[in-house]
Amino acid sequence: MRGMAQLVKRAYKYRFHPTPEQTQELARTFGCVRLVYNKALEERIRAYTQQGRRVSYGESSAWLTAWKRTPEYGFLAEVSSVPLQQALRHLQAAFTNFFAKRAKYPVFKSRKRSRASAEYTRSGFRWRDGELTLAKMDAPLDIVWSRPLPAAAEPSTVTVSRDAAGRWFVSLLVGEKIRPLDPVEQSVGVDAGITALVTLSTGERIANPRHERRDRKRLARAQRALSRKAKGSANRAKARLRVARAHARVVDRRRDFLHKVSTRLVRENQTVVIEDLTVGNLVKNGSLARAISDASWRELRAMLEYKAAWYGRDLVVIDRWFPSSKLCSACGARQEAMPLHVRDWACGCGTVHDRDVNAAKNLLAAGPAER
Image (cartoon, rainbow, N blue to C red):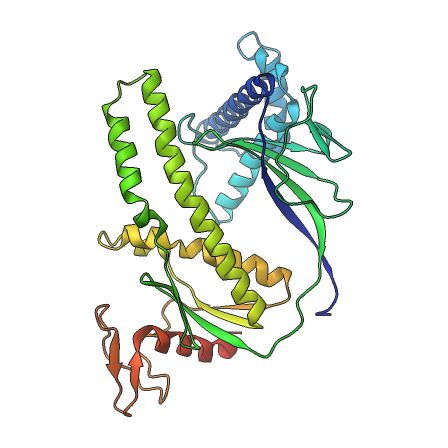
């Protein structure tokens, strides 16, 4: 079974350059998507607080049809209906996750802070001869094909988005057959850190590039320039873009590095053992919050999860309360305390440990029991 290819849903994301007409159409669509989501959320809250009942997707879809017929919201009929229906589906999924205690209560989308995006299903776009044309548009998108799609790929969903730096992206969801990697004997324990992004049970340390720290001066200059501009002015809008581009540079470089690290760990090891870190609680530490956020452990774990599933590897997550730093990996003796400033320590059995390497070894040893 390990050698059999599996069909997975995989998203390919590309930059594209819209024409002025496409920019105007997409901006209107983004605004309508946000409005429909917020208005449906408002109606759902009202139905629950005043009548004590939940609302189905079918009922919210009927609301959308009624809104389009009113003078106040008649402009909703001018954009493609597909992204509007998808916004209602996303809201339905958000409530489903909330009631299943997998997520917090849905919140309203902000024009300034929320991601500007629209999702098109198969009826909302045309894919022909490698060109993508969205509903309500006459010309295909000018996509920068930085890498090819799989042969004979047919997108099932298309998501168009614009980031804070003003860059346009299109994400194509396609079905792709991925063959698991050939089995290997090696397994590895991975201890996440700040100075070293990860320390492996083999003793290797993968240094943390600290992308945010390296670009901190650039970010500070851009933010100071923004603070000096008058609110509502054209110069302030330009300065805001410079800040957003500086942040985007950090995010892009960090994500690229995490992809390389996660791909390497999955390719070289049959089993990868990591610790279940509660990043949300760790960032409450004021002195370490910035460094922890820059390390982006949560994103690294997410990459390891889906890549391990794709390529037939095993990812084992050890309970957060497992005392990986306090246990001696040689004799199993447990230390009473292990403050963060202690980086090397000696066990009573005579073994001298590097804190992070010892923790990674203990995680690897605990992996079979956790599985």
